[in-house]
Length: 110
Length: 166
Image (tube, rainbow over all chains, first blue to last red; front, side, top):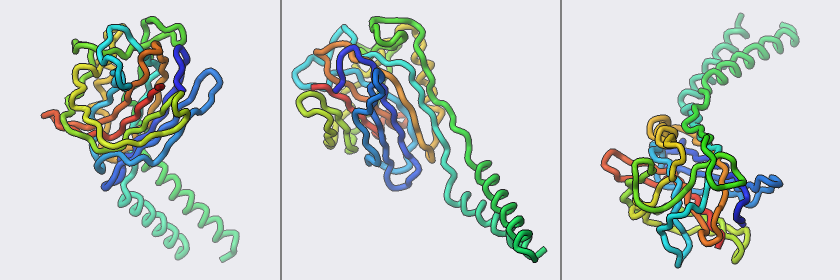
């Protein structure tokens, strides 16, 4: 699937909002023709509501029988963009909703 | 009260609610944004960092995770089982310390990635992307991890995407 000397893009998202189980999803796209080669969503990670700390690209060979140590590079990466989007807590959303309803009721009374 | 007036008030209130909700949605914060400025060996990507293996040096990314994560690993498998996803359990990434690195070409990657440990909080949606090129047919894969760790190095693997071409 991943050919030599062909650029690809990996998109991912990691949802840390749950207190019970964090999930992630990804898609793999071949850039030469924008073909999406693989997608997967709602993959259960580990733990719940864990503080992310390390972002790691592990360049070690993952295939059996290949030396783990090699002086020559075998993957290159570029155009890295990682963002965190704060998710409003449910209590905050409930408060906003209540304020909106209260405002609506007040206007009706007026 | 006319229907038109009532509808107008309802629209106004709903509008206020939408504005308030939009205001509550915080903007996304960029943790890492890197385009490496020094060209290396790939003709396909002009500016690259090179994922390598070998001994640790000052430009390495290191992971001090000593746990045994039980989370799923996603393997995108190539020719022998094309376009399938494999889910396997439990990999010990504690032994990978010496090999987890990006062999920098400009010395700037440490700074670029340092924000990862400080820019994110618990209730977050972490999104991102990167481009990559495989250079050697003999080397068939790599892993992309996001983990959590405390100051003592005990850690948790939150996400593990493994791309292989075997």
